[in-house]
Length: 236
Image (cartoon, rainbow, N blue to C red; front, top):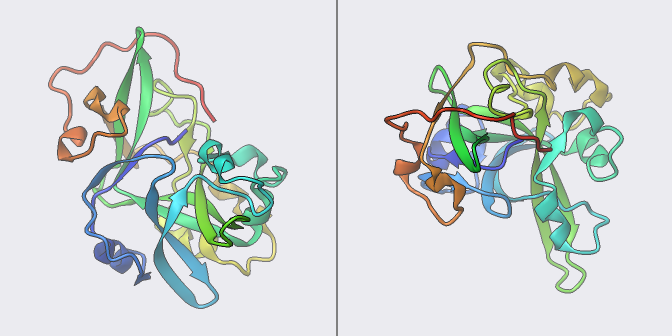
């Protein structure tokens, strides 16, 4: 799954990396982004690519209540094309979620030990996302929200968790974002675990477990890595 991530770089830098217009103008320095938070995403509309801020937790256009979004922060790659919540977004509303790292958890006895996952080359990760617009029936306000697509784990993540976010390689960014792609089935080859060697991970403070905590101390490696016990955590 993907339940937390970091956006440490300023959006001006992300916009340059993804060749997008910066519509967020945020300083970054976010070390514990959680579902229901606003976060920067990259979207493509015709010939315009923009970095904008959407709420994490997709609310389908047909939803009766915004509360649906709190359960839809991840979308399983295996069922995207059949899920009523995600199949419309898969066709024309795909996005990239630029992150400096994401967290995964492993049960260590009765506790949950977080691990930080990063690219080995230090560049940001582009996570596969879907977005939707939802009109609040009470206020008529249109809310734009997103979800992160997950797949099975690679060999690095497997001892920690049984799911991981889909990482879109730079050479496939254009194709993933293209809203005119006639057949979304062409994207199935991207919905796979990241190649071995692309990612690295290390344990971090359990302070990450509380969404109220933030700051650069959360991404520092533990001086004494924990002993891992039990089975990998199961999640969407």
